[in-house]
Image 1 (spheres, rainbow over the protein chains, first blue to last red):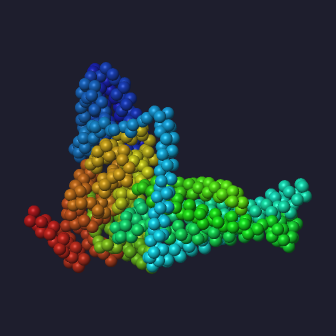
Image 2: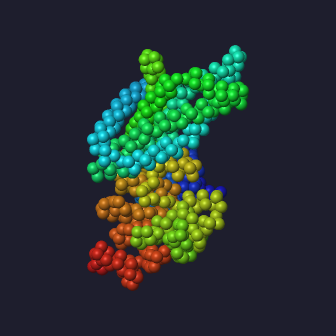
Image 3: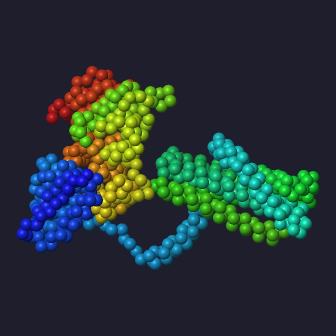
Length: 377
Length: 259
């Protein structure tokens, strides 16, 4: 450090440069500035000589800067001579004389306005593609389901049980906890606001109907989309990246049948089970808050519950659950198969999978609400 | 840097996982500006040795000194300085998949040097051309490259900061014999122009003959033989004998004799 890297002297029409110190990567920034400055300072000079004898260390960075300097001078029709370069560094200079001769194709930059329109259009087209892929996956899964129904022996039971353990059994604690808290919160809010009219007891109706019809299944579906949908996408995506899916195909297996069908069927079965457990936990949480915060005794809570709800409410919630499981499974698996070579695309598809499945779950819930209203359930 | 003969000194190294010992009291010197080829059967611990030297695998016992610095005793800052002085080519290339080839090469420069974007662009293209890629390849993503191109791009990244030592983990595996031969030659040329020390783990007999100055054979967790090809052919160690004078090794040995 502190060494003089480049000095210059003007002798008539000849610019004499003397280099010293370390012409290496560490000093490259400093060197670049020096080289630029020196070239700019002597516009009247006709030729330049560069004495490299004082240079202690020399690497490709230094060699390139030297080469760049001589190139600049030669290009403007002036002469550049390099002297005093040690023998063993000549190879480096020779190497550098062969590089950067061709112009690098610059990435084409488009008009930002056009770009934003294009992005908007592309988003629309992508949405269409997503729908097609979704439909395609639904069809492929149906076909393979039909095949499995015809040849039940081909069905992968071990894999199904393994997946069931991961998706349903291991999800029970967190689902119970979350729905318990949601039930408690709804109950607390209900009591707090109904108390003004002296109608605390109606908070039980609120909790019961909301949880059984809507919240229970929605919360569970969102949890499962975040927990299992994302892991499906990541698993399948990583398998795709490592060519495991191609390997399956070449061995005569259908990846849909081996990997995807068991996963989706497990979700279709697991979601109603989890919804049932979640709804019970939410009702329990609501009852606990009713007792502790609203002073409603368990006997009254239960009798109010049996007045407020009918089997219909319970059915409405449970009927929706398998369809939501199907949507989550199909979106997650389709996203997994769309992963390309890079780690970034794996992340992107995992995000897509969760966002799309939560979105579709909510849309589906809305459609069911219209449906049930029109058939009077 | 004081000019010492051995740039990497491994003494009494013991590395293991669980109750399994992979390297057992291993001693090895890598001399300045040589190409050392490390060979050994699958599972002999070649890659483990490389990864231990660069600090990715913890050691149980022994000492490793690289460029005069003991990694175990170095603090964070010293380690960073040291890590800038070596480059590593991983077996699968390990290019960052979300960056283009050019950005991959620029990555170490951007993090470690204070240079302008312009110079960085020129240097990255220069490095890519040195390893035999074209400027057109610079804007490609790693997933668009063939196996040979990936290795070349990864080598360009390993050379980005003009390291003093380059570690190569099976540089020619997965390449066709012609590309592998080219790659050997490339390593040889770069080693001569840049005056770097190369530590190369390999399976490839051709590489040993064409690229390496010295060979170290790893077996039973130790270096059982080291020296030039001629020394290897004279060695009496059973594994070395089978390796260099077996079916495949023998052919090359004959060619070497006749040449």
